Length: 74
Image (cartoon, rainbow, N blue to C red; front, side, top):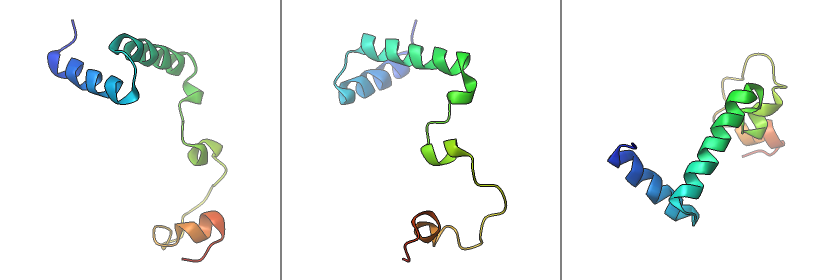
């Protein structure tokens, strides 16, 4: 029912998390159902989840991101 390559990958991930394959599958299905039922709650990244920044980004954002995010000069 599950392709062998996918099963082995999932078994590896479950083992790394210290849970059984069944628990991993149940959690994955539960998470997916919640995503489908509540699509607006799918953004797990707190920064992007805020959605408060509107406008263009500075050209040097990638090199000075700490300064922009935390007020710290790098």
